Image (cartoon, rainbow, N blue to C red; front, side):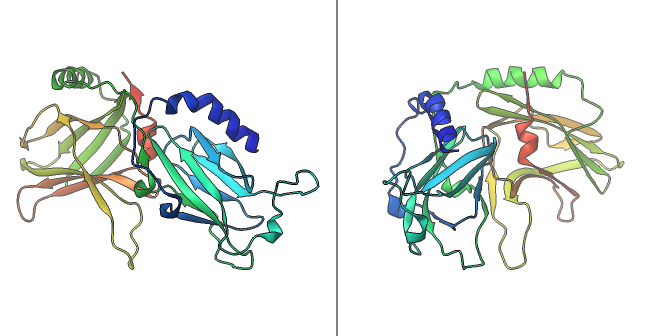
Length: 288
């Protein structure tokens, strides 16, 4: 299994030569992942994994799917390789090596430590969190507002599919995510708002944020607002239908979170409609 990691590493090493300098990381500062004998640890990435590096022979792994890296303690056999350490000699808390996961736009590193198999609270999978992602910067094509405007008009001229990617309704308001498009490092959201009442709608705000998919009573909901770098028009009122294109610089989020879109009316008791977009919807984006 480990050979697969190194094959992928060699095939993609050219990508990393393009990255610019990023903040240095110390092993002592890395988040810890506890690994137990005979149990696989699945590391789930919000975007396709380009490669995984395991710094020592104590660990082996493979890529069962494009978004998952599977790591476990090596079944060492001292008769085959005297340099390998028999896993039975590990002590609780021992550093087994560094796990590096590289996605399309980030790198995440973890310090693997040994945990006794007698402990029943063993972690079997984790989602890579935004705070663990170190961005990898590649040469990017920057689009001017004029170019973004031209692309947005091109999308607005397209006929809307009868079945949107997502649809939400509330208080005779409807929000349709018509489609998601990508171009280079830009994400385009094509959204239509429909007012099925006879009362016109005054837009107070349209908010985009990354939020927890499930909110537990004992925890606070983490919300990270993201703002579009461009929108095709700045209309503040509509009577029946309102369609707009919102452009974002490329962003990622784990499967445990969603992109929340909220349309809020101007009045205190105004009508509101919300939509949750899974990251899988972003990954299925069309190109143009």
